[in-house]
Image 1: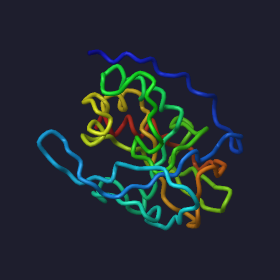
Image 2: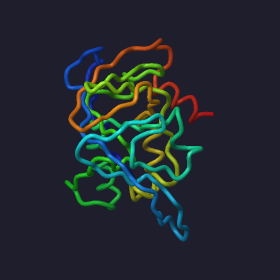
Image 3: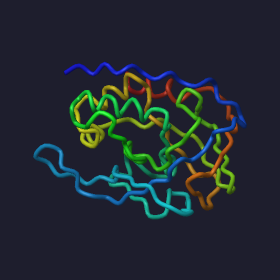
Length: 209
């Protein structure tokens, strides 16, 4: 069946110290077997919210795992962030695809993200921007997330990756500039970098390539 959920309106441009920039949920996951058709693949895409502060090191959050470091993880993709503002859209299209009930809420971490953020969308994030958190951790915006077959599997329908490509709602990876501890509920400010290449621009260019 067709997936026709309207794209929710996006909030205005995020200012450097805009209120509402916050970590709504901090999510970790261990590598587990994911059943895709007749195949069984190892994946760390299943993230779950955790309470309390978590240590942020150069290679990511303590207790988090990635199955394929060539695609997820490493210094430039140590942490994955996703805007909470898009969750309503994914809940709607999953219901339209009849893989979830109408009104069924997706818990934080369902997009595979470590940080579920409020107030910062892809269009307002540029490569080289810094997220400075209240506790002192600093994370550098590095690149978009590019969806794969595993994303279709966890969303429950085979058009999920295509919808992410069309909407440009891919989230973004972060490198760790200053390690420390980070917790859900923590606020942050956006420190602009060169502002030459936005996350949607880079995502669109690489998806076309």
